[in-house]
Structure formats: C-alpha cells, structure tokens
Length: 230
Ligand code: ADE
Image 1: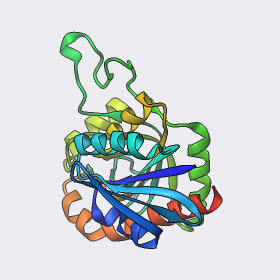
Image 2 (image 1 turned 30 degrees about the vertical axis):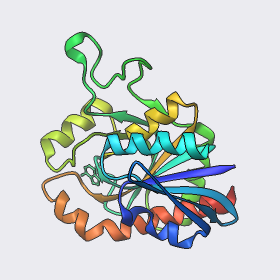
Image 3 (image 1 turned 30 degrees about the horizontal axis):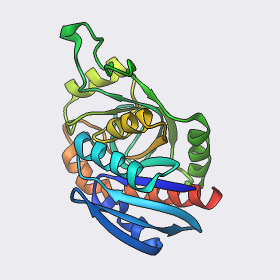
Image 4 (image 1 turned 120 degrees about the vertical axis):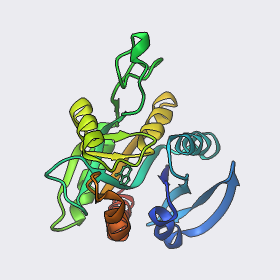
C-alpha cells in the first residue's frame, strides 16, 4: 500500500519530507518526488508547483511511476464560508474546477467534458478516515464538503461570491481539481485536505503570508495521524 501526497509549495510538504525515513529523491519534468516511509507506511511525496497544469503533470507522473493506492492533496486554501476562519480545515468530499467553462458550446459551466461531471467525487471511505484523523486537532473546526479549484488566487469578494454561489464550495485553491480529475480518470482514490490561510477577500494576499505556516502545521498533523492509523 503506497500513499501519495502532493502539495503545491515547499512549505506545504517540507516538514513531511524531513520526517520520512529511507528517502529516495527522483526528479521528473522538474518535479521532485520523495519515496520513503513515515509512521511505518510507504509514501511518495511531491511538491508540484502552483496551478492546475503542474498539479496534473505531478499526479499523472506519480500514478505511472509509483502506482500509489491513493493520493492526498494537502495545503492551504481561501475560505469561502463565513463559518470557516483562518486555521480551520476543509476535507473534500469532491472537487470542482471553477474556471472550467465551455458553456458557449452548450456544456454547463464547470462541467468537465468527457467525464461529464461538475463535481468529481472523492472516495467516501477515504474521506471518513481523514475526517477521523483530523480529530487530533483540538479547538479547530473541521468541515467536509466541496473544494473549488482554478488557476487564480482569489482575493476579491465579487469572484469569491460567484464561486460560492455557483458551486456551493467551502474553499478555493489552485490544484485539487486537476489532481482529482487525473485520479478519477486513472481510478485512483483521492482526497483534499486544506487549512484556511485567508478568506479569499481583499486581505487574502496579506493574510496568506501571515497565516500560511500555522495553517500548514495543521494539515501535516492530520496526515501524520492518518498514516499512523492506516
Ligand atoms: N490558496 C490559499 N488561498 C487561496 C486563495 N485565496 N485563492 C486561491 N488559492 C489559494
């Protein structure tokens, strides 16, 4: 059993990589993959870079090269919900791509042609295990629901409201939708764990810098607990 973990930025995966034993690093298409063990479990961890194309290249390469049984996308996100504050956690039950829009040719906004889905579902058993693992965080709100992805750092209320109203999503980020789509077409289970670093509003860029570290710490705790219980 091999677990794949993908984060966009160094900060989102570096603590995991430094905690791993028997680490072997390989670079493919400029993406570093770290194969090793953590909590006695086989793991491959990669930092993909920011955005959906890097995320898709990373997920597809990981699947072909390391054959993970499941992939977890971890990192930070902008909260779209008034009930989710900075530091709170979202665990995906599915992911949408808010910037995928072929509606002028008759495909509903957000629907991914070919697989004909707007929301790509996560594996229910995996979601449940990750929600359980997140109980390790005390005094932190953990919500499960839709994650929205797109090639855009959302930092204005107008865009935030459009995504929230169209997709009923809890948070917005830039990679999960691509990883979800790649996993779906390869029949690999996936889930997204995101800690809120900002509220996707006019202060998002400043909040991101101020809170990214504390947010990341929480996702790493969940992943370590998940692996321990696997
Ligand atoms: N990742 C963290 N905050 C984000 C935001 N506001 N928009 C997109 N991705 C993010």
